[in-house]
Length: 392
Image 1 (cartoon, rainbow, N blue to C red):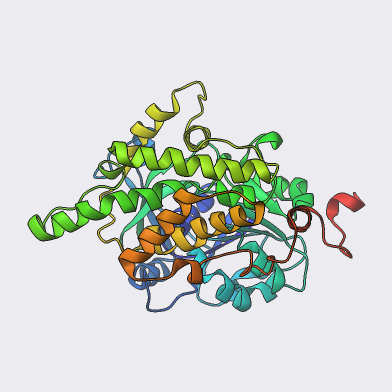
Image 2: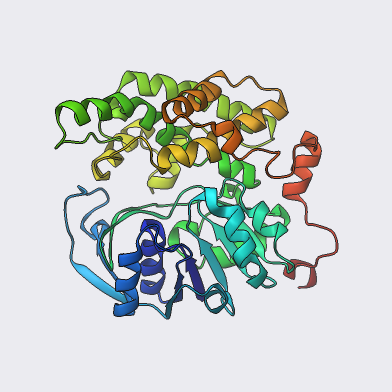
């Protein structure tokens, strides 16, 4: 297939390499300028492809400091031109911070064509913005997490630390799930999942994004550790997964927030899967293992940091994830004390109003809808369109 990867950061670079390695023709589009990864992008342009250190070849979980052999994959196109990158491809995968979805939708959605598959990873219901800006009829999909855990380690080179065994998707509207899965299952092995494991709608995918749980709580619990190291051990930095998410405080908060999330999922008619069980599904072929033990093993592959509380684990996953969860809870009449407390505490530390900045049903233009109208909007094909399934 012909695939456009949008985003030249950690996830986009790794997926571009993986897709090229799998035999797909890959175009890589960088949409930001002079913000992050510019040296990395220019190195890829010069090399006409990307180098990768794939640590997963050495074992399922590997230490982030290890290095496997570096290999190279050429890419069909590496560009900053959206039109050039998008036209004529089968699948478009968007790996950018979800805070930028509204602005990016206005720039690129006009190039989407009928029956292209557009996958947002992560989504947090952002496909609604692209749909509003698109005159044609692509299939939108949203992922819960990236197919891999990766880091750009030097200009032109990405290191893959871990690959998911499975990644569930949702489709918008949900009536196009069969069409979307026919394309998505050909991308990566992680997307070749049973139909029963495909999410019911984009809100279900948003709430199963693991970052809502582990990034927000992990960073909040890690905050005093960061402060302590900065003052007393400036040459050291704690590990969020290894250190913060090994505390009893973190797991007490996880249990409470996870319960609120599952209450919202249940009210939406979705399966209320606990965080650790969803983690097991993503990470392991053998689903008979203990979910907590799998999570503990995963921590081995995690890199140090983040080095500051002011990073996307907070500035993206709190306003885009937790605020969306809170907004859905409010619409459904569900009390969300742990979610709202975490939003307020993280915003207080950074002196920001994440409720004002965040993704809500109002910012998506859906605040006036009832529960039934909301579900109809995300699950039912918009009128006046024709799908491939309808004409086959």
